[in-house]
Image 1 (tube, rainbow, N blue to C red):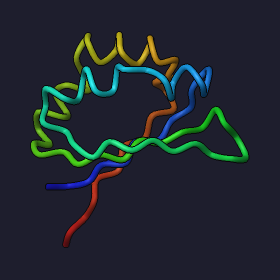
Image 2 (image 1 turned 120 degrees about the vertical axis):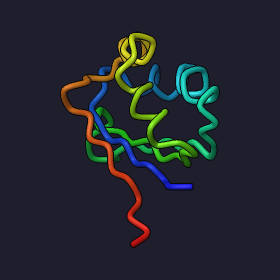
Image 3 (image 1 turned 180 degrees about the vertical axis):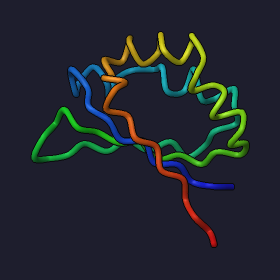
Length: 89
């Protein structure tokens, strides 16, 4: 199961950290071990690390309206989103 890192900028750290949206949108995809990180030098730059069982389903979900709504609720600035996939080569 690959591990994904997504890093991006947000509007408000406390709101983002408290949000239930990560579990709501990623849980049905079987995503587990979701961890959040905050840049101590810039608290508006954050990251999420998670284990993703189906990369194709994850990619499709990232393009969905529900994901866009969750990102908007969380205050994510989508133009800053970068997703990295663990390379087990």
